Amino acid sequence: MIPMIGRLYREKNVTTTVYSRSLVNKSVIQILKTHRFVKQIEDGLSDSGLSVVDSFPILQEAVKLDLGPCRLDIGKLAVEYKNDNRGLSVEDFVREALTEAVESKAELAGSTDVVLYGFGRIGRILARLLIEKAGSGDGLRLKAIVVRESGKGDLQKRASLLRRDSVHGPFAGTIAVDEEDNALIANGNYIKVIYSNDPASVDYTQYGIENAVLIDNTGKWRDQEGLSQHLQCPGIARVMLTAPGKGSLKNIVHGVNNDMIEDSDKIISAASCTTNAIVPPLKAIEDKFGIEYGHVETVHSYTNDQNLLDNFHKGPRRGRAAPLNMVLTETGAATAAAKALPSLNGKLTGNSIRVPTPNVSMAILNLTLEKETSLEEMNEYLRWVSLHSPLQRQVDFVSSPDAVSTDFVGSRHASVIDAGATIVNGRHCVLYVWYDNEFGYSCQVLRILQQISGVEYPVYPAE
Image 1: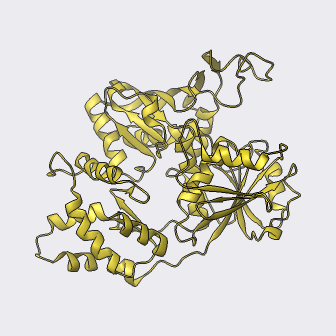
Image 2 (image 1 turned 90 degrees about the vertical axis):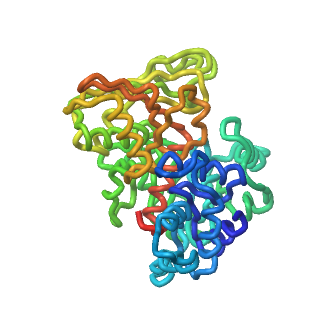
Image 3 (image 1 turned 135 degrees about the vertical axis):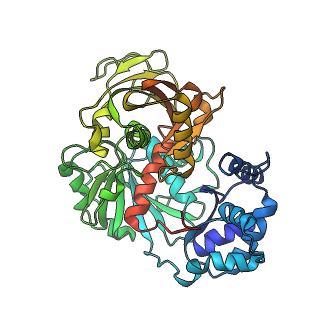
């Protein structure tokens, strides 16, 4: 299966999935675990879940077809075929099911150049994701990163930080350095390293970059005026901010309000990691039970904004040593949530505690609902949301009694509901929501980038 999955991806921009979980670049064990996961969704399967014996023939037949770019769910097709009582052969069933994928071949929007402005925690994770999703090269192409030069050995240090990560592990592939031309070569992707201290002074066209989306990861400029400096540069068409936007900027949480994005929007914000974590489950709860009011408490891993040891800091409390203290601080996520979900305006308060862990945070949603419910109904509903709803890429669900924060490092969901910790008493409920504040958030940023670049391909079978 692995070479067929790779060939579909590289040659046709077809991402092979099993119940929305990608099989691209996955190991044998990961593919088997993904198949086993299906037993949580579909009734009537054995305890071992969906078998590769069932999905393999589907994949074999799909490879023979002249498919256009899409997300191909061989897991759902395999289950549909098992339940089909018409006596069709696998070949006939697959051809029928994928007729539209062959006949209407989605038109490629053409490749989109991407520039990362800033190469810190989020910048490097976005680089990994963009390189991972390069496919045939016809979609998103990471063309450059922009940083301030830090002296001798700068390029080697940038490469090393991309190659090895203390939290997220080693880079999946190879990274080479082109000292002469100031570039990194990651899995064959040629990435120019541009040194600049002024966002308005770079001519990107001289590096072969045209109509690019620039992702500002610095957080230095958060309003329309500051971020507009990037648009003055030749070669830049749109700007995304990986921090909460101020003023009139649209704060987008993918899966919730991304339909607000218009072609005329040249600058948009992907909001914050915490806003992305809390808004999808809040929307799910609001849609089903209604929310009268609530309080959001985030238990957040420490960040580079804090000090390793006690030292001066312009913010209250953040000057104290991050690895040694729980630090009470503020969060704007509750207010920002109302920007993405206006029905919550005036209903939420929030606060935050920074704790001595390097990654993965938790949001505690203490809510008063408009309708009474039970623990069983609440958990079953949230489980359904994670498996079948339009929010399934944003909300995950775990019922393990032994889950701890490191279990969610690398989660691609914006939030993970911990079912074992849920508390419900009539109209009052408390939800405990895990989130990888680095990786999960970066995946949300990438989903917005895919949308505005036109590389969100159709799904087969249709959801």
